[in-house]
Length: 308
Image 1 (tube, one colour):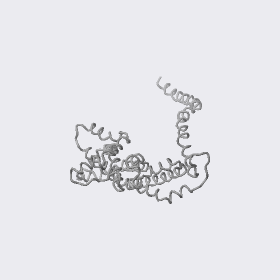
Image 2 (cartoon, one colour):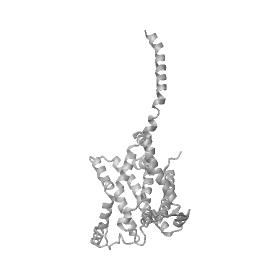
Image 3 (spheres, one colour):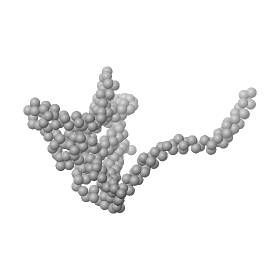
């Protein structure tokens, strides 16, 4: 009986495969149909607007019925405009004030929290992420009141300590520092969560091997933990660079880009072109920023890439 069953089994498998093969062409349309909505939405809201903006960057158009083809004039105007490079310089200074300190601080804090035995670790994670999910406009308005020159809490505390008041929002140097403080306050919790998740993803066997080799806690942290966090560090540096290149609301609410354009970022400079209905120059500005940020992002990924 078993011998007959064994002989019949290959025939049944072959018949089943043949039926599935005949049925395949009739069901092959289901896969493309299921993914078709993604391509439709991408073409309508991604590819076409990008193509339209690229065309717009080569014309002189202020929103009216007429426009004029100008070729690369919008790009050459921006590349020779001191205000464009000034906005890039302001964004670069703000990047230097935020990203290095925030990245190193998040790595060190995540390392300490991962080793500490806290009873309310989940509550602490929730607390540090609250500023990140708080509406940015509300936080910026609060910073305007806190750092006001005459009535702000910060200058009041400085006066109580016998120190002079600081023009946080109205000086060319301190205005960028105030913007950086707002970004640090809002996004440091997000940075901490990313680094903490990266540390918790490191296998315990790696630390056991380091302990067998006689490495102490500090040596293990900098020689084992930090190198294994390279992907998370590169990810955070890239998204931070993208965020600062698009920064608009922070300087718009805090300083309005002043004084003397000292806090005008690339995002706010782009908004000024759009607000003035100079749509062609604004589109060219967008693509220049895309090229620059793409280059910086690729450089950051290359720096933090693991050596082979």
